[in-house]
Image (cartoon, rainbow, N blue to C red; front, side):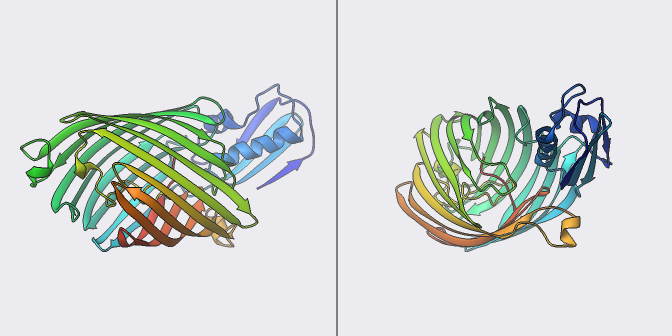
Amino acid sequence: MWVVLTYFGRVGAVEVEGNRWTKEDYILRYIGLEVGDSVGPEEILKVKRNLWELRLFRDVQVLFRRDTLRINVKENWYIFPFPYLDVSTRGITVGLGVQHSNFRGVGESLYALAAVGYTRIFSVGWNTPTHRMVKTRLSFDLGREVYFSYAYRMGLDILRGRFKFGSRLDTAWRFQSELSLNRYVSDSVHLMFSPTGRDLFAKFSVSITRDTRDWELYPRSGYVARATFSDYMGGFTAWQYGFSLQRFSTFGRTTLVPYVRVVATFGELPVYLLPYLVGTSSVLRGNFPSQRIVGRDMFVFSLEVRRVLLDRFPEPFNLISDGGMALLMYLDFGRADGNRVLIGGVGAMVYTPLGSFTGSITYGTTGFSTFFGPSARIF
């Protein structure tokens, strides 16, 4: 992206070009300038930065001349498929998903994912924009997951609907609440609360997050801390408290990412809900590192080393989407459900405005596992 400065004054009009799919009103909402505002070098650069943070364009040009602010954008490819591959000592799961990253032309995301094999998955979801300038966020997903738990020798059929609401309190602070309705079915009645092998319950959680990261596609500085409380209601009663802290420190092209997570659970939470070092989210797996380890009560410390290989895709790939690629190595250690945890792995992360994708190979307490598919920020 580049900026041309030829004149400074006050905005008399704003013209937007190149937006074939993105609605003009949505662009104007976030440029940070209105008619009558004064324009200088800082304001022009702010327009450029704000439009880039929308993650909808691969190029932005801003020109101010004769009291008119002219914005020309080149849009990304918004509809794209993504593969899903999970290979571990438990089995193989393969699948395919599709995502629209600018649904309705206002930055909303819509996706669907289906997978077969060791785990059978079907899920669909929708969410409003997630960039920093958004004050409120909404999301909804519905999914089904069927698999056999070798840890507890039981098959599980999980149906889940989840709704999230988030609000930005100021630049760094964020509040989020979540409500999910869940149905677990199994033929192994001895591990279920209901004698029929069918447990129905709701989960409500609230969290407070402080995020000072630089908000680039690939964060390189700052930290993110989160405190969470969850309440399980229905066939059983349980409470869960959690805290996590992640730090980004960059030296040249290398970023160190230490991470700590603490979870404590009280009440009658059934063991199959959080199986020892087995389960992960059924939707968009691959988050680093929050989804690598699951447990009722745990203390886990992680250290990642990320090395940027490409700051920007070379031609002709940069004509489709801006972005780059990084390699990563990580080591997790701690305790989960009274058992020691030790997991190491290597992987690669490709980050673009269209989405982030991760390929990884891990080995440790959980056994051997490989994964390739979409990933997301931890929070």
